[in-house]
Length: 145
Image (cartoon, rainbow, N blue to C red; front, side, top):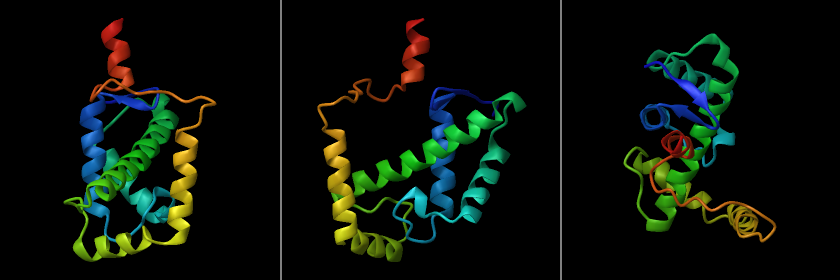
């Protein structure tokens, strides 16, 4: 699939997000609670797998890498946030890994970070409201022009 970057997204966005999610799911074999916890070797392995499924013009290398990492970080975070809220293991997380993640989410370290994140998101100093449903900002921008 030939792709190109657009903002923090890709064109085509939904198809690329599905590829990234599938790669993340297939290689998530250790309980890394955040993207920052992933070892560099695993990140490289994931990106190499991504490169076998997508291609792009060389001029986009830097943006593709940045957007890919942003998408991986966001997919992992969103998946775990939903899983905690509905108290249900994502299908791609192995049972023994889920147990370890649940233990981590009860630690003071995680609770403190979570509280800081909630405060930052509800800050009255700024932010944005995303109300587009499943349509990405890039898809909306293209639709409106």
